[in-house]
Image 1: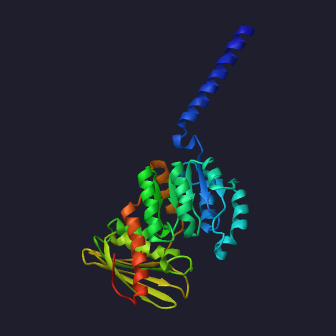
Image 2: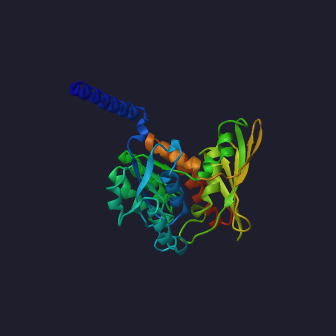
Image 3: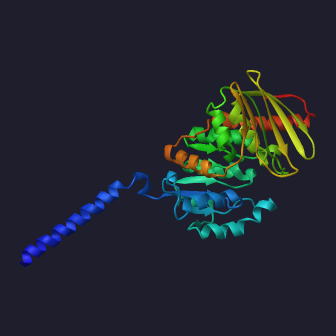
Length: 326
């Protein structure tokens, strides 16, 4: 009797273990191991938004188990509007289960992937180089850097080291922008975009915030802009670009009135109003897919074209609106 009971209990135990193993195998591979992401820079609301998306109680399945596990808070120490956010944002991410570290070197020892979120582009070259040397896949939030020269240096270093690098504004992934790119109105014949373009003295004019609308324009029109001219006033900038095939596109950057994002794409089969802006969800999904694949969804040539456009616009302003070739 005891022997039969022992055999029966043992069989039940083995069946239970087998059931657990089957359940484990049924869990998608992407969810079996936490994928550790580190943030550099807690001086921007983007850091909070991304951490909430990845570390929430019920994250979107599209985020594949990636989590923010560690953060280095700095971030700008000199731009007051950014630096003052750091203490509050630090406490907020700690409440979401994020470990705060004292250096980028310490961060790199804790994570597998990095999001460089520092609002201050003047320190991006120094910070990005540490990540690239460590060989960690890197997402850099706008701007890639605070000069076109630094942007090119960062991309060249990543390319030479074979380190995956991706940068984008969330405006690129606005639904209507993606619809236009996807062919909803046929071939795009031209586009006008607009966004806020507030200024920060430490950065070239459009690098600080106007980049959002410029990125929409380049995403729609492609990277082959050959010349730009800029009209500047205290409250508004208008930049017109000519593309290599003769198409024209424009960006309107505003510093007065309500901050809005949008524009119009003109296609062979009709026009499409761009907007409204619908948040960070699409961008964070693209970042996760980038980490997963090791391939940037935006070609390096296109990203460099965004910064070349903005750099040329600054030169045009300095030359009282003269046409500047890229």
